[in-house]
Amino acid sequence: MRKSLLSKAVTAVCATVMCLGVTACGGNSSAKSDKSNSDPSSSSEKIGMHQIAGVTAKGELGKKPTVSFKTPMTVEDNSYVVLQKGDGAQIEDSDRVCSQGIAISVKDGSELASTWEKNTPDCSTVVTSDTSQMTENYYKIFKSLKLNSTVAFGVNDSNSSGTSYLMVLTLVSKSKDLKKATGEKVADIPADLPKVTLAKDGKPSIDMNGYKGSDSLISQDLIKGKGAVVKDTQSVVAHYTGWLLDGTQFDSSWDRGQSSAFSLDSVIKGWKQGLAGHTVGSQVLLVVPPSLGYGNKDQEKIPANSTLVFVVDILAAY
Image (cartoon, rainbow, N blue to C red; front, top):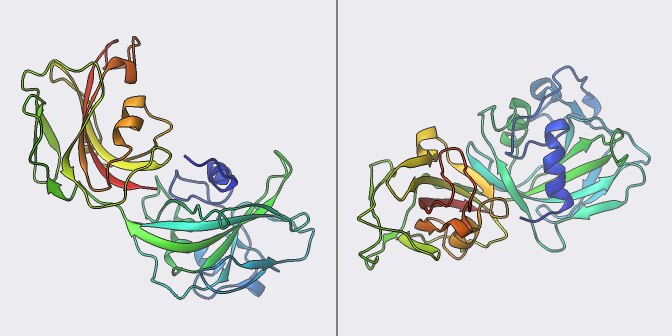
């Protein structure tokens, strides 16, 4: 997964400003409003966050803005200002929003980082009222915006590296994650592989069909999706279930009632290698030998040296 300053800022967001769909963050409902810079569609009385005064942006909507403010300036965590109101589609519940970002030092106005030049937007934001994923304040902010809007968040980093900055996000596109695999069923699946059947909601069950495993990775489409090809540097949203070769289930996002999002850099090698190259919307049967799984180490319900069998629905990639 790309290690830009923008993505690093997202990691710091839970202590400071942006949720961007990662985890719940602590809002500052006691912050005072600054009506001189108030946006009528999302006032601080509604949002419960301090609005940043004295910051402006110029430029074509949906393009990299020119941001101006008097330096040096101080910013608070849990502060924001809408700099440009977009002219695109309204942001709605469950939208995955992609944002181009600029980090700008409030000390001297210098640009610390930008995704615009290499066109590497961050797409980790899912707009949701589920407070386990996004706080109410940030939900209200994003729901008030349209595509091509630009919004700035204050990050007060004076107690860590000493670089406080504005994170300036322009919302450039949106999509919705799939709920299950969609596409064409694959007809020529090798007959000796485990047999998968699906419930109406898409949840898989499995018959191991006498299968004894493989010394090499098996990555077989069961349903061929029509979405973008997954790259091994991306993050993936997936529904999945995992079994041991004896048919024992050890994990299932379906049973938890919520899909999972993860960087392919943070999972076992069998997943990174096995999902890359498939398309969004696909359902993939993975057979992962111990060398590409957990090797000779126990993992809760997974004994050492286990071959693992997964059925994975690829719902999104970003």
